[in-house]
Image 1 (spheres, one colour):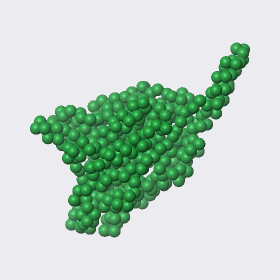
Image 2 (cartoon, rainbow, N blue to C red):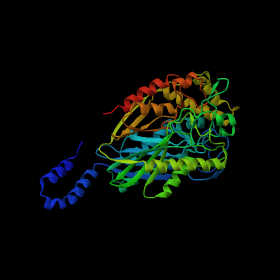
Image 3 (cartoon, rainbow, N blue to C red):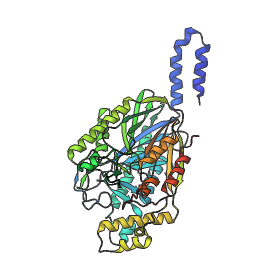
Length: 468
């Protein structure tokens, strides 16, 4: 819609004598200020680094021993004549179930909105925590309090990030333009799925499997090669850049060395280029995408992956085109996914594992997470799947470890637009394979959804991406 100030400006430009046209720039500045008041942007960040001796990835046997580099939460608040919209990206592995709601509720309260309008995502680094408050309660009941995560630390962290978000509103600035840009990322992502010489399909190409010659030489497979960047501007002044790429963000992990890994290191390097432009990175739909073809887990490969991600961020910025920001709309749909029907994940089987003190602590943690999620599904508690619509671009938040095909599916649904997909929202489902991947017999202990997930995901995407 063309604003009244723009219409008046054009009428005056045509109607006024040439002698006073020189005064119009002053009016134009006033009109710009009027339009700018429609939208405002606030940015925030906070340190979310775990303490030493904290469990990583929920089930890793080696707890945190050393902080290699800090973990952060970065976010922004969009303000308009509607309720605020929040996006927060956290350098944690996963936030699930009641913990996910606790985070969103705190952020919503801090800025005066609802939990559905809070897009909370984890970047999914593995040397970082998994939090699930319902699972933690189940573990406490069997004498394993704080084994999944430090509950007091999470409460303090939530309070800190909520305070940062609330305080940011006092420094909110006028927002007039949106930028969209993208660039191909070179030699980072590869699909887990590989086919042997004998024609056997497996999903064994993990994050550091480049040490295997066969896995390193296997074709890249299905990925989204593009890093996408949406930026926010005040006139010609950039304020914030949001980058998204679909890959697991680990070069190596499990040694007790806490790190934001190569994606966090690339983000930090890009931030140092210009501290006036806030840099945020989110992981795309990358449940089946890793750096395994190009990474053998060495420190040298972490440096190389960091450099390649940084170079893509710079290239996407150079390719950015600005557009006048005419709308900020919000849509949310609710998604119910089927629980994995495997015999090992029945309620009885999970309860038996949880109470079996002969099993490892890690096995019992996994049982508690599965049991809590199973009960959630039985209670018909759906997943929120939100979308921020800027007209020329959309941001969609997917649950869990959605496979990259869902990201590509979203782009095909809106070929007229620029769709930036974020993975690792509500993370209780773990991996969310496509029907084709289920047919290829994908399975994993981190798989809590069953066949039929793609039907529900596709339907939810259609609802939330539908243009107004």
